[in-house]
Length: 64
Image (cartoon, rainbow, N blue to C red; front, side, top):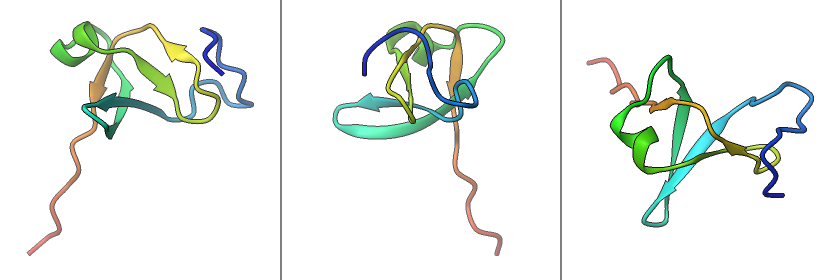
């Protein structure tokens, strides 16, 4: 589904973007980021386009 309104029970449960075939997890942000200025995020559940600012989630490295 490509509508602009999320139809999941919990709105926007998880967001992602696809850059050159690689899927990245993103989260809402208060202001635009370089990534949100260039790409559009989508709801991982229903595929709706998320048109608000977001930032990429940086995975944590395992503790030593």
